Image (cartoon, rainbow, N blue to C red):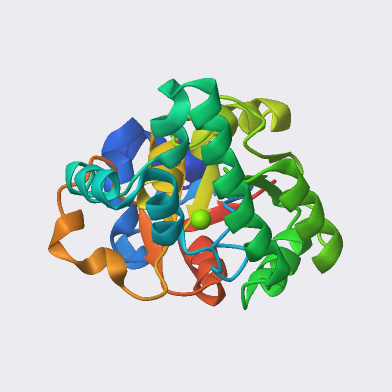
Length: 252
Ligand SMILES: [Mg+2]
């Protein structure tokens, strides 16, 4: 017997898999049920190491800012990784300025060697063809975002840099993008190569998350007990679109 019109596949999936209990199923094979698809209206990308090939040696940057001894101590206390911007926030203004100069220097060297991540332009084109929104959140500076936009002829809107406070892993920038787009956080996916920044930001905002792990570095035991785990994991941007198409209804 046909269902009354009110029971669309979406309302049925909502009734069958209410709220978050359904979220944990999102990593199951898509064959679970076609009715388990969530609507996805936007994708928010990290920039460095996600849309661009990683060229900034972050460990060398942390060493230069902290000194070897403090670097090693801090690293052992923070298995998921050091949050350098957060760490230097309570330093004296002089120390902070010195730290920011070192960071800026590393970032400038990164800009000189800037390359777009393989698969990024194609993925963006596919998202555009479905009218799915594209945003960007980076802990890098606005000048780096401007250069990225102009060099590769592609624009993300909104694109929030570290001038937007508080920055990742705080969920604020992602929530800001959601409200700018007028979409719910659970209609958005955050994609990034950092578990501690991108995935934490996305999960805290209530969004879906996808970790880009090109080398399998997050497969090691030290990341087993992290607070925030991604809903999806890919080893290249080329895999992202099929993850989206398989698991979501791409409806802007
Ligand atoms: Mg990154």
